[in-house]
Image (cartoon, rainbow, N blue to C red):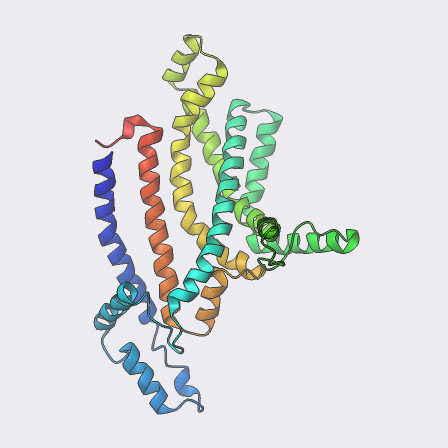
Length: 322
């Protein structure tokens, strides 16, 4: 297993390099980042020339890519196009907020999706199974932005009518009190977490049900039952462990999708995370923070794919690699 992990780590390096070049080349091919600034009469030609020299915008794309990689490795992604504040300082502020949201949503989705999927498979064709199947289809079809707006309206109306604040509909914190900070943060993130996890719950429920049905009809499960093992042990120790393998794959790939999906959710709920950071820099046409955001997202996807491969070997010894 150690050999496989080391080999996968080495494979990840060229993948990361290729992703960084594709990100830089794709963003740079859109056009000159100074195109809009040249139309502004309040910006002098000398200012534009200084930006061009500082960011090497008069060089070919491969040369500019080398300078960008150098800034990313030695200067923590350097500075934005128009100001001198470090990009990394802004990223270190917003990344923890997004990770809090995404990790909580993913854990909630895995917990509910696995439990519902397993019970639906065990109680196949029952009322619960049909209800869970219908709910998962609704979850697949429900737009995240619509659900976010509906929950905002619902909880705002509940607060206005009852006068009791249960969950907040915007922001990350309302109090700086250290003693109540965690409770306050949970109250602010509860609704965004629900919105972000709905689609994932629907996915994991369907994958878990299908995988569990395949496993519980396998020969080794029938053998375990024939040996007289309790049904609970057969389900939890033998069937569940192998049925989790497809869900691990989907959850690892889904993590990067959740970061992208958080753009809409964080913007609607006015959370100071990677979503608003990406949107604001995209609208201001500042390409360097946008490329840094894309690079961080690509790195996270590669890391979680590696974690998924490691978990394969743990969950199913048949696919261990050494």
